[in-house]
Length: 387
Image 1: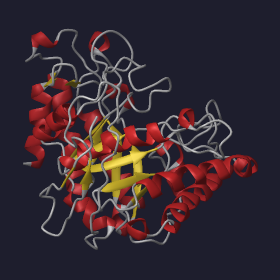
Image 2: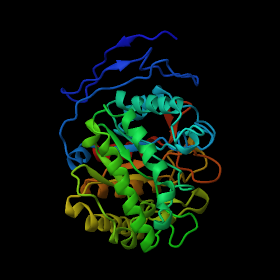
Image 3: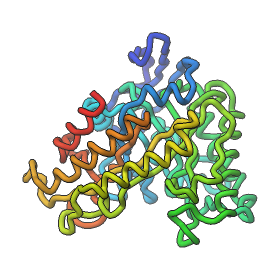
Image 4: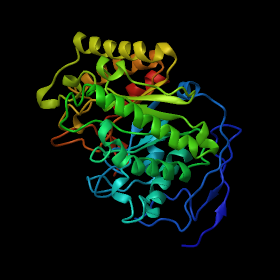
């Protein structure tokens, strides 16, 4: 495929300059083949603090179970991501794109934790789909709990691998502007460990503070735009509990954001159509408690927060039935949830794993094959809150 160079202006701000190098930066179909030259961006930072950056954001969408699928991008049932998919997500009104990404399976063997250049190029390609649309893009490391373990006695065994990974990621995206954010970890915890989802142990939380600092120090040391890039760090398991947040440490850095996950209340958000748990005052009270707790630890102290995962499973069996009284429960829930989030200045990123029918965690709201929304009433409700 012959490479050409072109320059494209994207209206993120009048000060932004993008330099692109590719055979077709806006190519919607990759068919598994990467361009011979990966698009690269050079963009000036705008001098905004993380708090100011978060204040510009509205609402987001996760490209779940895709680049984070352990056996390859399409191995968990989702199609290969195209530019057209992300175009449609942006067109609907989502201005934050989170790209969960698993890296360990893409380290080259016997090469000092070097990330496969082809994988880095593919991740870059998908990041660019969001940047091209003027979105904020959050890039993380996901499903790495098999080797990243918040245990003080084990940190030395994997820290060189962890810092090497983030050094390479940071260097690859070094010239990207402030619309690209890095998230150091996703739900860090010990699988099957004590208080796994509630905040872990004292030692686990201490180890996580060390890990978060190592992530920040590694990215900052790469210089350039990474010296001031907004970075997200999670609590233990990304949990919102007094245990998880009580001794959580946020580095003294104006460009830090706390990343939290909140499927609140769990009994509602994971209750499907066959076992409907309707919206009532107890659901609303749980949501009020959630944002009250976040305010207590962070927003009241001017520490910005993004809820990088939230959502409620599909509560109907046939989307042809929409409008449907059972799905109206999710609309009531999202109105309350995002209404409180907006009041608190907290952007929220819907967890879309692509699953919408059958069994399991049915959080899918976007039909990636047909480029349409399974739940237009829910999308309308989300966007009305921000528009």
